[in-house]
Length: 85
Picture 1 (cartoon, helix red, strand yellow):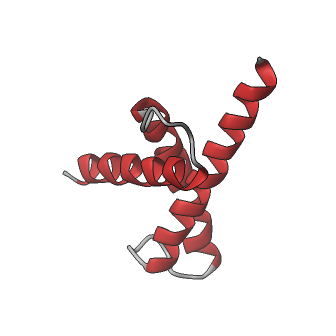
Picture 2 (cartoon, rainbow, N blue to C red):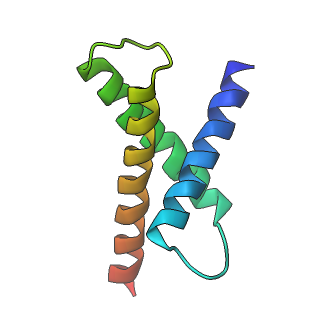
């Protein structure tokens, strides 16, 4: 059950990152939201939680770190796609 919750949270965070960065008028790319949300949540959330001494508990610092990590992953992906064209 925890895994399903993490996946859903990751997708929501990834979708929010796309909306904040203004991805496109087509809506949310859910595959990208999934990848960015999970990668951002893992890297950003885990790093921020551990650096602030919160451990692996669910704290606001981890949630904010997850969102910031998803923003970074989404921005990097958008930059890479523009560069490849």
